[in-house]
Length: 66
Image 1 (cartoon, rainbow, N blue to C red):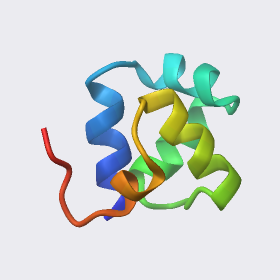
Image 2: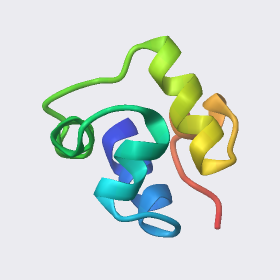
Image 3: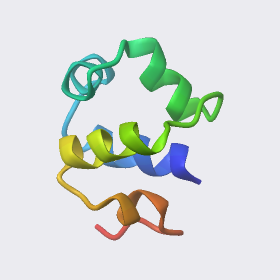
Image 4: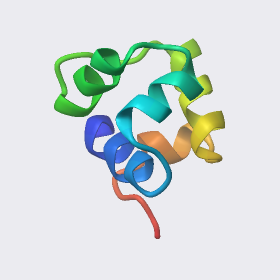
């Protein structure tokens, strides 16, 4: 699930607040993504991938490779 991947990758680098600033959203939006209540659009997925230094495809894969 994308929510789990975002959270797993984000926790390796950022707090929710730091990640929100890096992506250009508020912390509650990050919380919504990670809880599965919200899904980022394609443009936001690109910003998320850039902030996490991964490819968009890495966010969409079944498993995150460590």
